[in-house]
Image 1 (cartoon, rainbow, N blue to C red):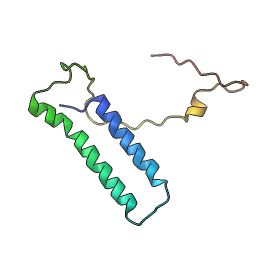
Image 2: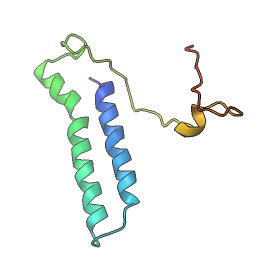
Image 3: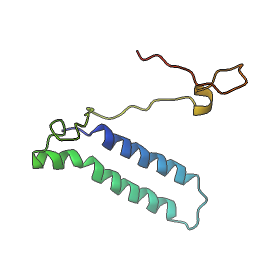
Image 4: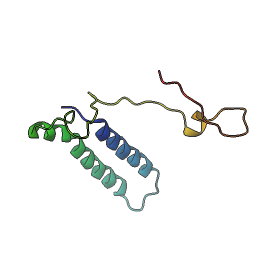
Amino acid sequence: MTITINERVVIRLLNAAARLYEDLPDQRPAEAKEFRQALDMVIAVIEARPAHRAAAGIDPEIDQLKLKMIPGKARRVERQSPISAGTLSGSSSAKTVEREIA
């Protein structure tokens, strides 16, 4: 069994929350470490879901949700900031760029 796309999204959101939390000022010495440990425990629960599905004989492909599966781990993708990626230079208004789907 592999992790679903939705589960991978949740893990990425939790990791993003951890990175944002690191930018906050410390209120007490062990706070950042405790926060990261708690997030790591939550991520471990999500990563265990494929094993639980396999043990219960649940196949997400057949399930009502029709979840898409991705094998392996997600790769990091460097993206432009939303401000520079979605505007045309040289125009007075912020028009979004139409992207072609390949």
